[in-house]
Length: 532
Image (cartoon, rainbow, N blue to C red; front, side, top):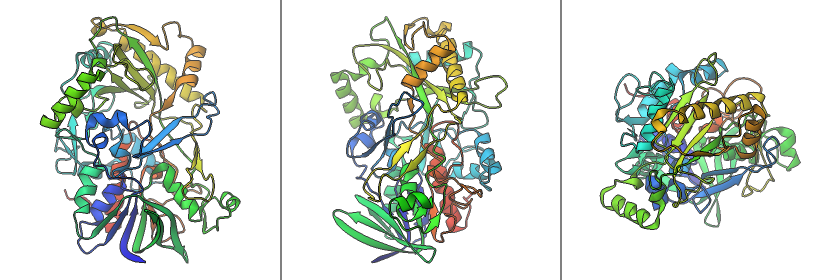
């Protein structure tokens, strides 16, 4: 039995930060366990490689939901990172903190100490923003954050059209004001993806007090007399036990952290007994409260060939982009797929944005980009859904994938917000700025205008934005899984630090909030606050 002070399960957006900060003290022994492979691969290093990782492969957990009851029984793809850096090594790198009201809501809902003023220092300490440092942005954190400025003409058309339609263009949507059309921030560092693999895990792994193991699948948390004392894991065919003198920190994500808790006897008692798992702590909220962002695409086919970016997917252009990246770390391959977008309110009486857009100067067919077509696409959806799903065990086999249902579109409000999002997109698309490239709306199609027709389109076509969270909710009520210090209720020496502890989903892509959670929990464990 190997001994450590801390065992961190998962090297992703939060787990990477936990290991990085804990190991800053040279006397602290840290074991970082990653089920997946190294991130030393072009698909997880080159920013444009993101599109090659979502449809499967050795660095992806290719989960899918159960048939969704409110979405025509469709199963939705749910890829997660099975690689050093977790999903921060796969995602589109769009860097969104969310709205300050998201975190004030957390505080009101029982996550004391997680309101906006509490979390802002940790958002600042994780980043080096090319807009900062200032009172709202960080200047010396490990994750490099850049604002896209070299826009394609169709991206500029979107931004101009948004202003023509009467929407704001905030100076910094991650700062004082979120609402309006904007160029996105992205965690990219001099042409490289700047996820937690590059920013945190690699630097931490160079320290003598850190042991990083890849291909190490944790099968159970060992709990004795109400205290977590270690984990069992399978590493390259061998079953291994590791002991934690201080704490075990689960950072396996919104699907696998609750799965690990349940496999370890922590969860809804009746469900555990069905799988003949001994109940260590009856916590009915484990696996509940699953939230995600859903989205649909509005696709415009342009009559002007070569005006968009689909041409970049022709074989010789892909080769040239790869050569440019290899030689200069620049060009199309050094950029993320989502570069501009916006945040909008579904109705004037809504207090702060509840709709998000990503806009692409591509014509899309599902997630494919046909190189022989041209156009542009709006990716739109609500960011404060009322729908709640859950995660539960398929069996007591730790290698069996968890069962997942988003229960998407179970709320009438979700349909209202989708209708508003589609109509805002059409309003922006109708502005003069799009005249030079205007194309036919292929989907949903100009004939789809009534509430009933829009609802049917959404029900048949909405997909996941891959932002799952909430399944180990932080709080103090009977369905809370962890307390406001991320400690699992009723179990000593065990915390959860990832998107699963979010009480409610933030406004926007959740990678930056998840990194903030890892940073904040690490500082809580160490009993300190960020410098400055």
